[in-house]
Length: 391
Ligand code: COA
Image (cartoon, rainbow, N blue to C red; front, side, top):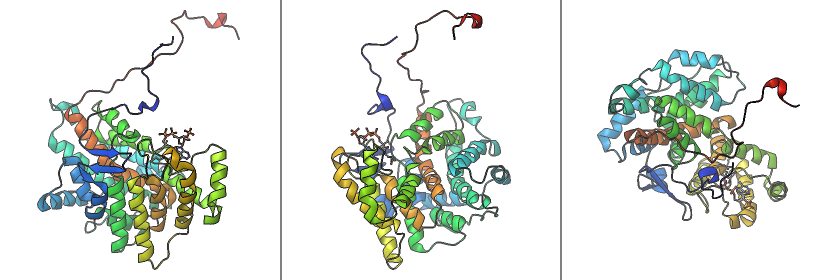
């Protein structure tokens, strides 16, 4: 049964899935704004805590509101002991994104309240929405960092309440308090990844949220969607690719072979951006800052990444394919001592702010997502008994 005129658009390219006031991007000009503020400004001047507030509430907070919000995030960092028990039963060589999705999916059982999604007549109270957003945001970093130690058979490093979100995360990961430059760079990375209009994982969050599922399940749906290599999983692939290239001199020949085999270059290309992703530029400048801070010593992978970018420019820029946010983020995380398979979980920690902002916007004016399809299968036919079927 096929239809002659098709309105189906693969990948829903250019199909608006919602109306949103949260972020805006112009892929031709390389502009990204959160609530109207350019990402370049936020990465320079804002903090992850302030950016979360901005995304969730629509405006930059005044000093008292920011202090209160940051304090709530600090006080909610601990997770129930049983979440740690769940982790102990997971295979230590499993991917941390699967661990993260499992633990986040379980949070609603340890911190009940999801019944309030539907029980309160006109939807959940503002108090529930804001409280649960803070709890989920606060525990994301703890869960990711706990796993880093538990999978090695070690006790996790408990969170500290005297550190910023970014500094505490690095402290819990590395058991060492980061210096001011490292903490600032991690903070800016979290700001940069916090939101990006209706990408695949945010769309998954919207669809799940529109059923009035509990917010931890909304985030769990988005985590699963972010895990794939065509989305958030690309940052890990970039590092594996740079290691495979081995040295800047090999970049050009490696690229030629790769393109001849019709394989993608990880960390390049974007459905929306047809110029270099503005976040890739900022991440690269932070790598330069870290290099200077460390007296010129930074991972050799950075030089390979630069050589590959130069080689790829000649071959891919005419197609509008340039480095995206995942290209330099992995090199930066590697330089901050973070294992490769934890790159995508860090993306998830940060993007939880955007997912929850979209969830909040969705449930404030909800209609369940229920698209349609173009059916291309068999006409209605009669059931054939097993004994009468031909081999
Ligand atoms: N490496 C090499 N060529 C690429 C490419 C890449 N990373 N990304 C796109 N292209 C090429 C395509 O092969 C296609 O070429 P063609 O016109 O000769 O067939 C052209 O650019 C258009 O790409 P298309 O596949 O239509 O883009 P898309 O919008 O469907 O896909 C991505 C976007 C992100 C899925 C794609 O760019 C990709 O796979 N990138 C690598 C994974 C990645 O880094 N993901 C993170 C995104 S933030």
